[in-house]
Length: 407
Ligand code: ATP
Ligand code: MG
Image (cartoon, rainbow, N blue to C red):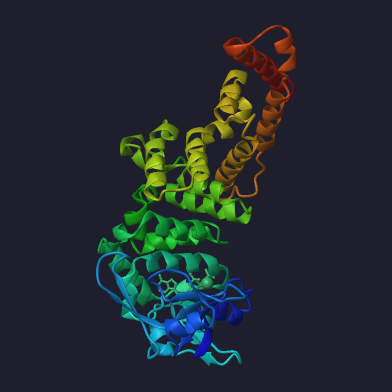
């Protein structure tokens, strides 16, 4: 039997990048031989094994055939006769379809090295179209390697466009899609992920609510970039430049969805878009079964980001309502993430990227002032139950008035 490193490990070594996860393919072996060597099988119907000592993944060389809609519709064929070249041809991109042995001899039948040098993301074969997830994968790799100058080959974009138009993207499960989306958002250039999806028509299929933002104008005085879609891309870009966590990046992507619903005769203004957007944010959250922390922050940022921007003008009572809505007493981190998302929104405007955002410290200070109101004296005065809650609110409001007057 012959063992080769494949996929990302080979690609990233050739790019001079650190290799974290190593995938291996085994040619010329049977399941029985693997088990006899102590390898542990991973799945019931998948010829993938874990090494008895290192726990790393070893997959038997296999071919695939599409037998139905979506990812469930695949049949695998693994046997000792399947060659390395046959295994590599079922892979998504040429730069992911190279293998190397222990001596670093490269097997590269589909010219991945040439495409690495030319900085091109190119599909290996027409079988690319058999798994719609590859549309998201290519967009994710574009987001990851944009800084190195990688772009998607024209003919691959054509295939991605055909796949998007065919409606096949609808067959993807929420879990598989979210895994790609979340990983892509955490890349260095998440805005490229969205841009590539838009360019091939996949954004309209996956997140029509985001796609609808392109072509929608905003007032030039606040938004020199005017277009709401471009603004969204910039906000996402800022979120990566500032190393924000996934929750914040997700909220950045969805914060302005309501602007896609504004009647054209109201353009470029978007009255109450914070509220009209909530049902759209909820729909996208549910479509991809997004983790709860991401769902929550996206809804809160959608609803309150304009409060964040107007923080210094808010009445003490409105400020208190904002803090209460975030439950800052038990969830301090979530409020920090809200502030971060507001700041990214403000910076994601053409020419205003470097402008300071004094609202951030002001909001932090307000949260601090509200938190410092002690419960003990109120208990000592005999307050309990709902009355205690009311008294606490009154004291916090007082504290916020003082904070506001001194700010
Ligand atoms: P990463 O650095 O993100 O791990 P990777 O290229 O190693 O990148 P994996 O998801 O670990 O990505 O997959 C390993 C390899 O398996 C890929 O390089 C590719 O050759 C192949 N592969 C994975 N998923 C698919 C898919 N949906 N369609 C085709 N080939 C795939
Ligand atoms: Mg990998």
